[in-house]
Length: 498
Ligand code: NDP
Image (cartoon, rainbow, N blue to C red; front, side, top):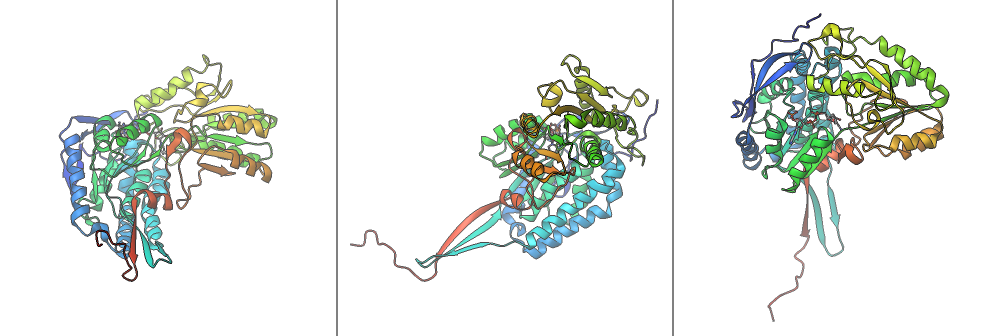
């Protein structure tokens, strides 16, 4: 049995961050594990409602009483660029801490996640450099200006599957538009984000970025339910998202919800076959299979179905699952024991549902203490199977065949979700018809996972509410204010002057 080393000496205790200082929370200690060996590596001190209140007070004070909200665009760009540089200067340590929390592959953390985290700050720096406003003149002699002002104190709730890349999109947007933020990372993956908050203390004034740690129903829910919060930006599961929105709704706090998916990856016989096969494997197995945008329902046209499935299975058998620190590893451990057991339960239920296991479905025995599972593929008896309707959020693909474009569209849209769709074809009318027919917020044609930050990202139905991206974030993190001024002293109707 192999025991994988911890990627980095873990901090013995993880605390919160308020007013640019560590805050020793007043809650219980929650154990944190390294998914690569299943060992407890640290404890996190949970922040209670009192700690959350303190974090909100810090953010409010900075927002209301300092120049932060009214900084010039030039100064704000400078700050965002400095945040980016701090991340790049500390890429090795941040990457190892991200690996310690998530079990994601170090090579990919360094090559993508941390780079994206740094770029998120540059992206919003560039975005605000192009900021422009609205002004209206009317024939009655009025000038009307539309201001965009920071929303205020924003609560940012991030999941465990890509903490740095996803949380920094929220932090960078919040800062770019002049807000003060309270970040709540997942209690399973606190290491990289608390390090980031520490590193940014020389760049960001006190109170601009606070961080509270703890379990969702305790710390997260205290943040969401607090009337002192002006926005909630949430990324996580659909069930949690629904709860968050109900809690926020009591205070009428506006929310964006980036939620789950069960995305259709539709492969037509007219596709570049090899590209589609490579793309289907990337679509389901990247990021250890734990991603909202995974192409987890692979729909293949009947003419090429058998060959495509067979080649997919052969390639899946050769995937290297193992130590996330090793360069040749393609899939690392699942993020937690509980999540691993949930994924395996789908494989165990396959026969009962009339589906057929094609490959995988078991825990990897030789790496027993870590949360490693075999990459898995299943032939679904129909789109109604549990493996086609529920988000598994792991390296687990389900195959379905279709005969016509209409049938592919109908199966693809037969889901409670609507985050992403993948379309593989070299026939332009098919590409256009299918793309326009998908009930999803994003469609990727002949490519997996192209995230254009200027464009909106988010889902239909149970995949979300609102969007993230340049203009979408500007709208969410700001309030619009309309100011009307007469250009000359105009005659006013007189009351009580007779
Ligand atoms: P969860 O919904 O379990 O948790 C997300 C975050 O919410 C965590 O920080 C969690 O804290 C917190 N939380 C849990 N309960 C509450 C509550 N009652 N009030 C406030 N906060 C709460 O999701 P996961 O962390 O399991 O992430 C996986 C999910 O995220 C998947 O469904 C995936 O599809 C989705 N996702 C969506 C993306 C998108 O852009 N659409 C991107 C990435 C992931 P804690 O974990 O500490 O309990």
